[in-house]
Length: 133
Length: 387
Image (cartoon, rainbow over all chains, first blue to last red; front, side):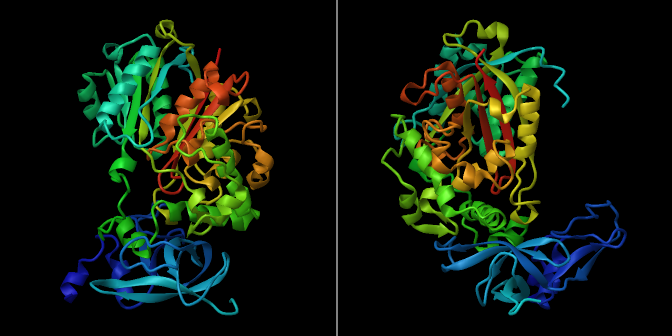
């Protein structure tokens, strides 16, 4: 896929997220007025309604809020068993993701890593932080 | 709690009917709806010509318009609200207000699905990478909607020490009620061990933690006190209703152990002037075993985190302290994709005293509690009473 086509991935508000993903950087929106982080992107801060939102690099670390190991495939490309999780970033927002590279319990520390995809930007998935943080 | 100013005008359910259930090979969804509507209206002493309000969802886009055409209804009040499988409890809320405000007099709420026969109603994972779901959730392989509800159950287990065996108690209670209902799809004996031995699908949910996939539906007629006098069977008062919703995407669930049902129940119970202890029969939306634990806490039958212990010892089963899922529920009786209408129908039958072998003796107050969406996204609660 050409770079031009990749540029079109996502929607007008999310393109900065996917451009950063191409560089394997996890970014979220931060409000310069109130300091609140939010994800997925909105056109203004959902907390204080300020326009002063900016994309900032997230720490890439968080904790497992919930998870489920699947023993049945959700469709082509998903080979069970695999783990679907909700990870709470240290900045506050939560993401749906997969846990890779080892088992986790809810509450465990995880860090972002990236899964390459064909025809789409890399996908942020999370791996255990051994020994915690 | 502010009471609704409009409820000096009492509103009643004057007729209910199920569509054909289970595996329906000789009808369409629309013909099923027509059959149920005619039967429910007959209970109310009415015909299709009396209907001036229509409430339909999941029957194609502009549901009330399509079904209105099929039934020859030109309403004064139409509503195709989509808040998922609990839309029918929300429809009672909306119909109650519309009737109390004089905007319609005879409201028909109806639904039918042939999802088992057609295998068509599975919501497709949105692969469209323009949508938020297609970008941020679908690429991770959630099995819809089992993984969504499994994530809630896993968090509930983590926070409160709920066990799989406690969740299995819900499936066992539903099955014991189903054994008393000739129309129920699954009537074989079932134990907690059977549930725990069924195939794991999306941890912690096993096959028997999940609802059926069956054809079915129904119709409910809501009307004024004056019009309900013509009913062939006792009319059932709508005492209160409430609804709310919190989120669509899994990442946006504010707290996986509290659902919008807490707000819906607070409003419904407040309008009705009742508390949980006053409820004789509960019809909770049992799409998954753990969902019922959530409802019990949201409705105030037990404290936060206590529902696992609450359901032990057959509390929800026949002869238990809180009869719930009394027709067998979505787990063992019928789950036609959107279960909410069947919860209302069973609540009315229990309050009329016509539930046969599964009748809860002397039932005076029943609650139907519906939910919708992928992760307790939306809730609506209805309080019904025999006068």
